[in-house]
Image (spheres, rainbow, N blue to C red):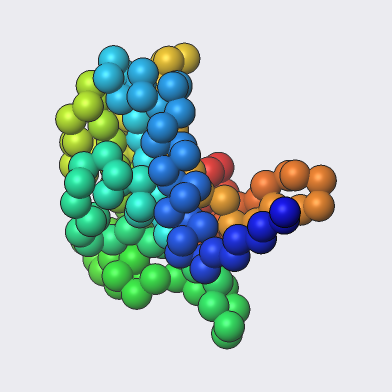
Length: 149
């Protein structure tokens, strides 16, 4: 007997997020260290698994739509607002979810947390594409390479 299961994109993202949240390396970092989760349409589900609540605020920066690549509205507004001019430097990105020994910390700048992280900590970033050879790709909306740069 053969079985084929088809999942909608959101269901697939939820399954991926659950699998990552269940990895031993992630569980250990959650318990003993730092886990930094970059907001994306996949990691959105991960935060829900880890906290029991849906994320609030900005959780998606860029996305692909039938009209092409675009930036989510709240992020675009934040980047255009005079109060967020520092976002032109990806190191200042303040929208990641950071867990320190299992506790969620808010408004942590990417560069500060990355400086603290060690070999047993975990940074989780979504991917935007995968090719036939298994190489992943991330869309960049910044000349500095975005947060992945």
